[in-house]
Length: 210
Image 1 (spheres, rainbow, N blue to C red):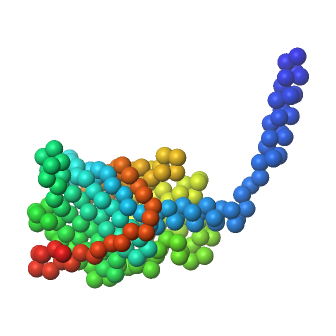
Image 2: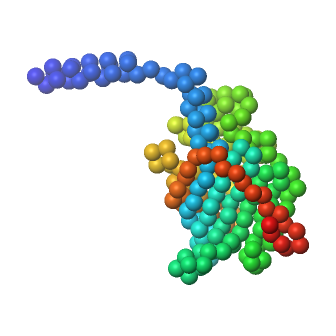
Image 3: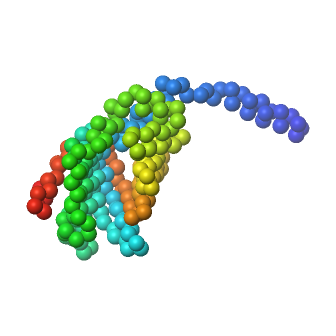
């Protein structure tokens, strides 16, 4: 009886394995493009924690991205979240701008040209990059390496000794972790909504922010 049962299970296993077909290259490309589209245009909110030399700072944030630019606004919610005010902003489009509104935590930063501007639209990546993701689950632009998991979701961004890891639950992005020699940044997403959102650039001029 036991031998019959084992034989029966083996038949099921062999038959089951024979019916599972490997995804075609076209199907893998479609999965890659769908996952990139998910990260291309969205508005997200949540909590960011910045850890520098054992000092931890937690703030709320709003992160918006479209096919042209991205903007991360860190918000000081005040006592019991009653008096929210801007704490810091990162904007990347034609240029990169970073500002700290209270002018004490870090200096303003202006980079006149965003070196990856042509790759910010994730739905228009060259076919060669898509092929590289399908084949090796990674690709490199300049000195920045992008890695993907077994489901072809972006999982890591590596620049020298700086690494960003993305965490998913049921294909929803829930957390991003930045590890570097200077600071650790943990971003927890309370909401992540895909859509075509407009983004207002910031201007840094004589320490005045628009």
